[in-house]
Image (cartoon, rainbow, N blue to C red):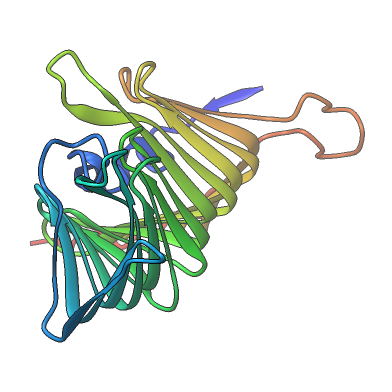
Length: 284
């Protein structure tokens, strides 16, 4: 059984929440980069030869190309060439007031481990936050960036907030939010897919949508929300097992479960409307 939902077609469009693509759009810190990696600090720079480690303290910063990581303290592991004349930083550990920057975006946390071989940066600590020009992402437990591969995870009470033109905002919440970016024909990294996993809530200035799992795929331009889907607009509700949004046709469909005979009401879609629940404009 299917029910067309005209006014809710944009609500489940998870693709509108592009998870900070500019954070991943550049190379980032990498052992494959030809740019030099520079470490600076306001305080001290220690060279521990036996451990093959540099320790920078006091507004310490490691920078390579457009990418940088700053913190109260940085510990950088290096390896040497066979002749011992070349040094290559392969891992940076940051503690205290960590800021990871890349072009016009920044991520904030208390601790970070950046493996330059893998292109993986993992951030933890209180008040995890990523900020780009069009959105803010927060998480309770961890941020994971596979910079070279174009993947990112926000774990634990993950949330994306996108301001709307004219005021208000759209918010996506879930236990985990993951995004994958791939290069297009022009060589730019663009959103390929986005997943919201566990206790998914989408809030707009006028509606709230809930479900267990959501996914958007750019190649089909279709978003899907599953697991006890409920759409609320004031007192009005629409309920079903699965909702599908075709962003190309602007058609949304809510589906019931496969078993519609197990019990009264089981597996059926339902819409409840309250006439006059929306304020009407004043007459001139």
